[in-house]
Structure formats: C-alpha cells, structure tokens
Length: 209
Image (cartoon, rainbow, N blue to C red; front, top):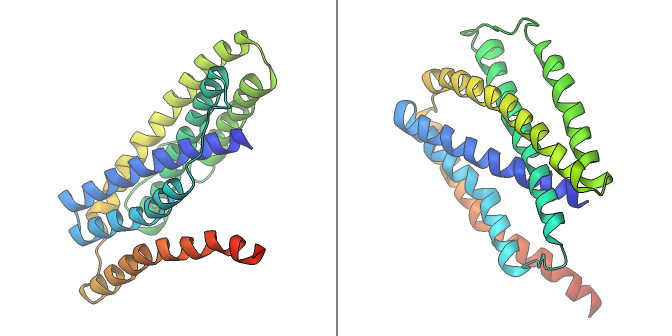
C-alpha cells in the first residue's frame, strides 16, 4: 500500500507541474480563458488535498530513514508515468483530433505505445522489487541508475508532449457563451469541496453516536 501511495504522490506532483505549464502556455500564447480555467480546475484536487491535510495530518515518524528514501525513489516512477501519459494525451490530440501533426516514432501511432510500455512496465516492476522486496543496501543502490534511466526516457516524453501541446495552444478556443458557465461551475465545485469533505469526515462519528 505504501508503494502505491508513493507512486501516486510522484504522479500527482508531476501532473500538477505539467498542468501549470499548460495553463501558463495558454495564457501567454493561446486562449487566456482556457488558461484561467486550467488553473481553476487544478484548484479542485488541491482544495480537497489541503483540507484533508489540515483535518487529518499524518505522522510519518514510524517510518525509518531507509524506508523514506525507498519511497522517495519509487515516487519518481510516478513522475515518469505522468510524463508518458502527457505525451500520449497530447499526441492523440495533435494527430487524431486535429490532424496537424505526424508521428516520428518508427513504430508509428498508436503502436509506439507498446514500445514505451515495453520499457516502463519492466522498469516499474524491477524498481519495486529492488526497493521493497530485497531488503539490502545494494538493491537500493542498484535502483538509483535504473531510476535515472527511467527519468531520462520520460524526459523525452515530456519534451514531446510539450511540443504536441503547442498544437492545442494554437488551435483550441473556448466559445464566449461557454466561458462564464464553465467558470461558475468550477468555482462552485471548489467551494463545495470543503463542505462535502466536512460532512463525509463527520459521518462515521455520527453513526457511532
């Protein structure tokens, strides 16, 4: 369970950074309304996570320093997966939706997914085995170059995704009639999250009484 949380944290962190980059790109070079909505959409999970963190602060004092390093190392696998999925999503948009881009991968699109999966799946499994199944320092040290290799490969996905996203920046627009409707919807969701979580967290106490 802890390993899943670690990879989820890395995935969410990388997704947040990518989302911020996308919003800045839209505000600077594309439809500024889309950029604003991007930022407000990102606030939806941040609002929920912040509320849960404040209401239920978790203590990691029971974890040893070694375990913390192992979980930190494994979280980079989540970062790599986020970069890869960003590349997949933007490639689909640029090629299948707009038709303004072509695939340069020798395997083509979407067969290139299988080529990347053939790398990411074994490295993810092998990294998990080294970090959490083999309780030796040598296994931890062996995971370091594997993690660096994974980040190196995923950085190419990040760069490709950033190039593909430029197609979205150049082509995507939000109709004037939909701007305020989407804005009101997102703001309503952001305001409703704390109240919803408050009721959800208080529900077990009410049932016990």
